[in-house]
Structures are given as C-alpha cells and as structure tokens.
Length: 195
Image (cartoon, rainbow, N blue to C red; front, side, top):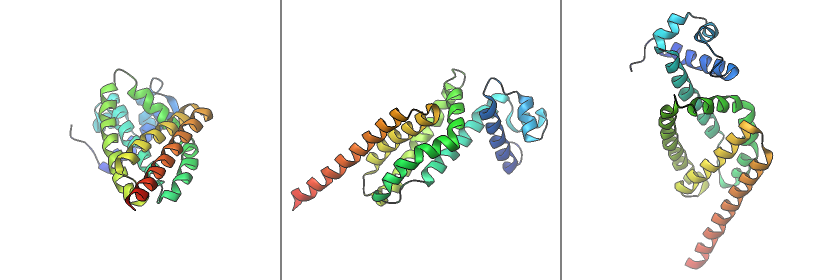
C-alpha cells in the first residue's frame, strides 16, 4: 500500500495515535479520539491510513521500532560497561516504555493482528542481528552470543515493564551474568590452551 499524505505529518499522526492507544487501550480508543488527539477530522486520518486497523498496525510497528532504537542507543560500549546496562535498562524501560509494551502485546496477541505481529518480529530478528554485529567488536564477543543474550535481556526488561516482577528480573539478570562469566572463563581457557 502506498503511503498517502505528507511524510512528516504521517509520522506525527502515527506517534500521536500510538500514545493515545497506550493511554486508553485498544478497545477504548475510537477513531474520533485519535482524530481529536491529532487535531484533525476522522476523514483526514482515514485519508492517511485507510482504516483504524491500519492506524493500529502502522503506529504499533513504527513506535515499537523507535523503542528498540532507544534501547539499543543505551547499549554497552565495552565489556566493562555491560553491568551498567544490566542494572539500568530494566528500570528505564519500565519507566519510559511500560505502557507501550503493554499496548504492543495487546495488539499482537489479538488474533486479528497476530500475522502483523509475526511480521514485526521478523524485523526484530533482523534488527537484533544487526545490533549484535555492531556490538561484537566493542564487546569482544561473537555476534550470535550477543544476539542470544539480547533476546534474554529484552525479555527480562519487557516482563519487568509489564508486571514489575523484581524476582523474575533478578533471576533473568543472574542467568545472563552467569552466561557472561562462563563465556569469559571459556575464553581464558582457550587462551591458556594455545600457549
């Protein structure tokens, strides 16, 4: 589907609609509420997006990709910086993005939007792989290890943002720390074997 309208305005509408959905929920947000939040008529939103379903799908994908970018902008810059990332990000994620994650799962768990969720998460897989490739040199770890750890960490952060379950979070973080220690120990053993 070709995008209609002024691109910058379209992006503003996506972000405003997403914020409105996050505040009111999927079922409680009408097209009229979205139009009022954007300062336009229902017809203007329909011109840009065609339907409320398209607004839901496009705003969720657009805004959650931005959340990922925000998350990865805080990524560790060195191996020594990993602990800072592990300590800070779950709480920052909950504070800044908890409502966004709750809405995203409300959308993608719905049978109506499940296929869109599958497509979105295919993109997540690609983006996480790209992030892992970028971090590999900085952290001195293989990209596949970083990508796996990223999935575990994001899952822990999202679960905390959704449910504020500190016990679950700490168990997940400790599992990640144990994996990192094991990885480092294996690397030291390999170095000693080559000497």
